[in-house]
Length: 191
Ligand SMILES: O=P(O)(O)OC[C@H]1O[C@H](OP(=O)(O)OP(=O)(O)O)[C@H](O)[C@@H]1O
Ligand SMILES: O=c1cc[nH]c(=O)[nH]1
Image 1 (cartoon, rainbow, N blue to C red):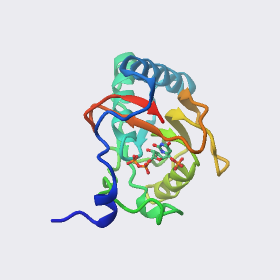
Image 2: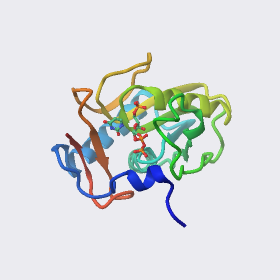
Image 3: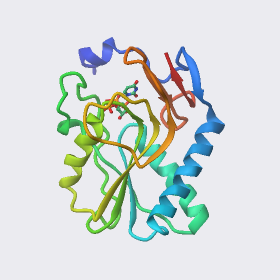
Image 4: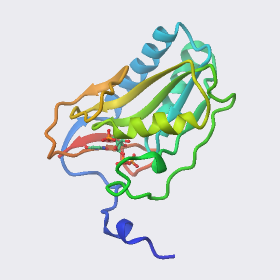
């Protein structure tokens, strides 16, 4: 089956990007460990906690954070995935490309503390879409946001509760995250 035109035009995403390295493998590991501890501290433990990853790379990041929480607390925190594609307000600029389907975390989200997890926070439009998408799953008591990189330039009143790295950037720059689970490389680059 041939790829839709927008996919054919995109460069391969899995290769090591050109640009300046801002986080290497060790930096990512340490940032995720810190975020896991912050989440536990803020939630006073792992009770009623749910992690919801935003595809594509938010999902493996959510799984890595859950693994760290399990190491610290001995509790398996439910992890799910939230397909936000059809909730975007800029769908034309972000054409739907093989979205990962929503995976409802075991036990659902009703009455839970949900931590949304994504790799990059930029305009905030992805997170806004995620909040809409989550309405279809249920009504959490609390929703928080964890991101590996906050590069600024918000277009909506959205902020992250847990940030791996605040990365000042120009709008003209691009931040590229690569993870072993989804790519042939691991790190964060800016160009
Ligand atoms: O705050 P925003 O302006 O919405 O930008 C952040 C989003 O952009 C990237 O996703 P992208 O749409 O490139 O898809 P990907 O996760 O599959 O790379 C990134 O993974 C975030 O989800
Ligand atoms: O630079 C950017 C902007 C949005 N999303 C990314 O992954 N990188």
